[in-house]
Image (cartoon, rainbow, N blue to C red; front, side, top):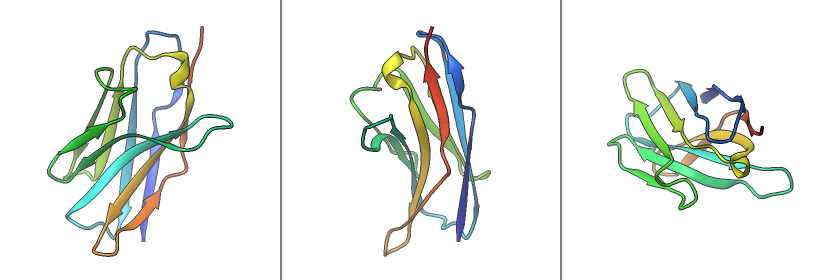
Length: 117
């Protein structure tokens, strides 16, 4: 089993910044893909960004140029630096890890990000 714990969410004004962290523990494969997803009230969960063990990253168009995903493989931790935040970035942000030939996937419990003046 794999456990994922997100942290770093909170309330921030428009134009501000936040840094989210996701710490993974348990039976983690040396090769995996981690990602951030978000879900706003009444909306479907959507991809924000993903990053592979080899640090190949992918972003949703809505966050390109504002968000940066990174990871520390030695610490099994992933980060999301969010700059120039907008009210429409308000959502619960979830961490996900996918690994193995059968693409087992695991989710964290989520952390709330609220962008409001």
